[in-house]
Amino acid sequence: MALLALGLEALRRQTAREFPRATAADASARRRAWAEEAWTSVSGAAGRLRDRVAAMEPGPSASAAPSAAPSPAATIPPEQVRTLARLEALERLGRLRESGVLDEQEFQAEKRALLGAP
Image (tube, rainbow, N blue to C red; front, side):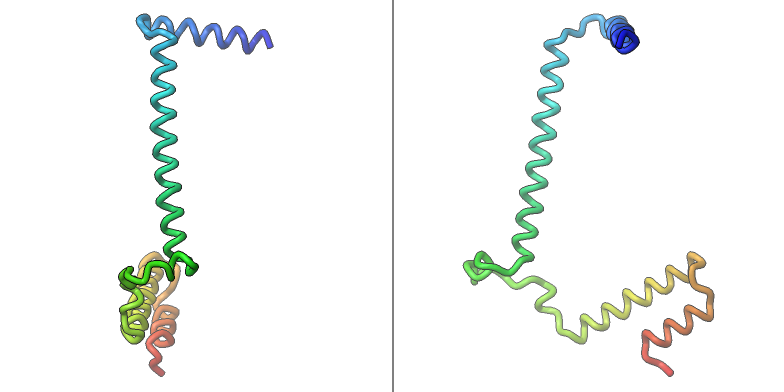
């Protein structure tokens, strides 16, 4: 316990030497401002997350707003969704080959399976 008190006193003295005009009230005000800013940021992010989750979940609030525009994903035709999924899978295979996870034979086999070629 004495070692802790000694270390704390040494830290206090070093701080006093480095910041001679600093007062406890200034430090307290800065901490309070930082805490308020952090709380505002966290509460704002939590609110945005809550809104996003509520928008994703079907429920009474979703049927209460019939004038809301449909999401872009709901307006994409199914064949275009399949095409986009295939392109993303091909890109992923290409990245795996480039990084060395797949060799050329594995890449070609996966590509054939993905494209449905014999």
